[in-house]
Amino acid sequence: MSMDEREALLKKREEEVGRRELKALARETLAQRGLSPEAESMLDYTDREKCLSSIDRTEKLVRQEAARLLEKHLAAQGAPLPGAGAFLDEDALSDREYYAMKLGGTAR
View 1 (cartoon, helix red, strand yellow):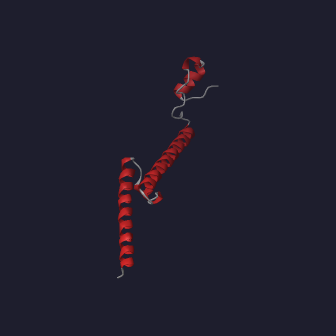
View 2 (cartoon, rainbow, N blue to C red):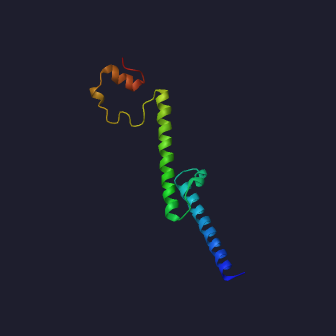
View 3 (cartoon, rainbow, N blue to C red):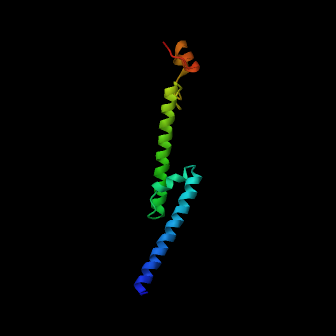
């Protein structure tokens, strides 16, 4: 085996070890953040920074989608959305609007 072949083989092994380390880091980070290990397939394993950045993007996407689905589900159930009414002045509501909001009915 020539010197060039040995260096190429060594470089390939180093890259494989680096990739395995990044995958271990990704699995650990995903678990710490409460994300599914299935998200591993969406990550960028080019280097540590890109891997962590892709985890951040994946987490943001998952959380946004979860919030969207929750809002859609609550809206379909007629339930108030999270945060709805957080700045609502209940004293400014009519009795009908107040009781509709509190009892889940509709104000007419």
